[in-house]
Amino acid sequence: MCRFIVFYLNLHPKTFNPKKENMGIVIGIDVGISTTKIVGIRNGAVISPIRISAADPVTSLYGAFGKYLYDNKIDLCDIEQVMMTGVGSAYVDNPVYGLPTAKADEFMADGLGAMYESGKDHVIVVSMGTGTSFVRCEGDNIQHIGGIGIGGGTLTGLSRVMLQTSDIKEIQALAREGDIANINLLIGDICNHPLPGLPMDATASLFAKAQYNASREDLARGIICMVLQAIGSTAVISSISTGIRDFVLIGNLTLLPECKYIFPQLERFYNVRFFIPKYSEFCTAIGAALYYLNKK
Image 1 (tube, rainbow, N blue to C red):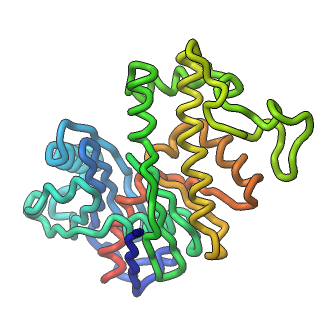
Image 2 (image 1 turned 135 degrees about the vertical axis):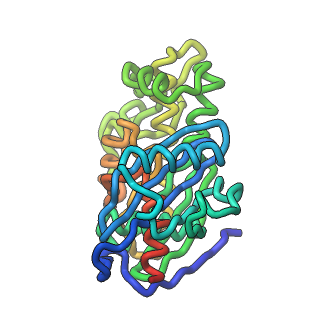
């Protein structure tokens, strides 16, 4: 069964504008197992998000925090509150550097951060992490509606087996030289004219044309396209009966160059809109900070 969580907020993230001038900085931290993302919010503005990777969540958290303070010349006395979220936050139970520290639910942070960054308040947030979760946002109502086990973990796992690498930079470099027509069965392969709503370059079947001797470049392209297409199509299905046609994409996978043509293609197929906000990979950390500010 899907787990449903509903949150009701007093302030709307789209129009959030702190009334208190010169308020302290609120730090939002999205703690993953090996990667931590951190942002600061002061007077309604996001301050220089950064990301740090380390061997474990605690090392990643404190490494990111220290670097963030140093890079932005922030003193501990400037910080009003630290807000944590993400699976790695379960490993941290003590105040960070003795500062007031609390936790925000990850799905709520996804919704708050995505609405704040996109300026939209009637959307489904597609959080593309190791797996992918879907969060429906309708004004002050934020509801986790489910997810799928396809995401960045799928991409790196398949690449490890098929390409003998899990280095995302190497995978991207290979994919740039690949040809998806050598991997996926396209509509043009099975029809001599477009079908209603489906152009000749639409995918009929993922990996259906892959051969045992397929090049690493073609396989890399196929893996990335498969993951993104599966996420996008499932997101659209998740919106059935909601009336929502806008989707906000967040998470590290939004940085993949293939997003620039796969999601526009899905927009044409399904008559929907996908948005990737400026700080797409930091939306959850931003949402954690907004959770505290909204409660104020």
